[in-house]
Image (cartoon, rainbow, N blue to C red; front, side, top):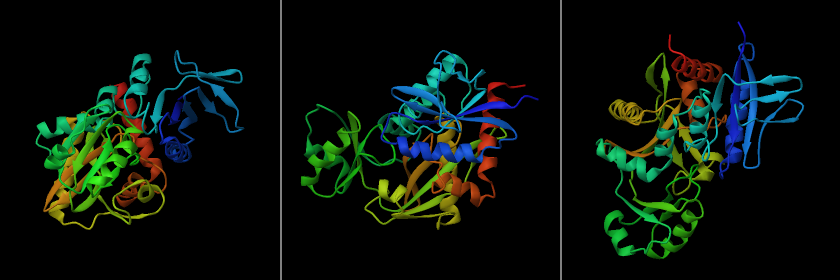
Length: 330
C-alpha cells in the first residue's frame, strides 16, 4: 500500500509564527516515517514552501497545494495543521483546503473562525448556558465609556484582543489609569477587543479530540502562573507550573471534562483542542478554546497525552487516522 503524503503546516502570519514552528517540528519528528511520507511546509505572507532536509525550499502550487521535489511532484493526502493564529486557526486556510478538497486535522472553517473570535464565541456559548465572565465589547474607533465598563466588569478586569493567541495583547487592569495602555496594547493585535471581569479560582486547561468517532477528553491541567495571569512568559518562558492531573476534586474534574465535551460538540469542533476555564466556587467559567493548540514539548496537550499513556506518535497518528476516516467514510 502506498504511504500517505502528510504535510505538516506551520508558520502563519501572526505573532505566533515561532510558536507554530516549534509545534510543527514536534509533529514532524513524532509522526511514524514508516507509515507516512512527511513534509514540513511553511506558510509565510510572501512564500509557501516545503523545506527539504537539505534546506532547499520548494514552492507550493496554490492550485492543488502540490510541490515539485526534483523530478517528483508531491500532492498531499492529508494536512496536519499546526498554524496558531491567522491564517491557520481563524478559518482562512482551512476554507481554502476545503475548497481544493484536501482533508486537514483542524476544525472546519466556520467553527475555526467562530472560536478564534473570542467575542463571538462567548456570545454563542452563553446562549447554551455555558458559564462565562461578564464582558464588554469595543471596536477600534468607538467612544469608550470607562464608567459603563466598570459597571459591568468591575476592577480588576482583563483587556483582550478578540482575535489573538498566546496572550499577545492581553493586560490585567487594576486601576482606572491602566486602561489607556491596555487598550493601546490590545488594539495593536486586533481592531476588536473585549473587557472581561476577573474570575478568581483555579485555572485549568482541558484537551479534547475525536477518537474512534467519539469525543475523548483528557485529564485537566492546573495552571499556576508566577505572573499576574497565564501570559506569554508563563506559557512559554517557564514562568508557570502546569500540573497534570490538576489538583482539584473528582467532582470539579468531572464538571470541567463534561463542559469541555459539551463545548466541543456544541461548536462542532474537530481535531485536538484545548479549552481553558477558571473554577470558582465549584463552577468552571469558560475562558477560551484553542483549535490548534501548542504542541511543543513544553505544551499542555503533549503532557495530557502522556498522563493517559499516549505517546506523541500515537496522538498525532490518531488525529490523522480520524481525519482520513471522516474524509472517506466506508
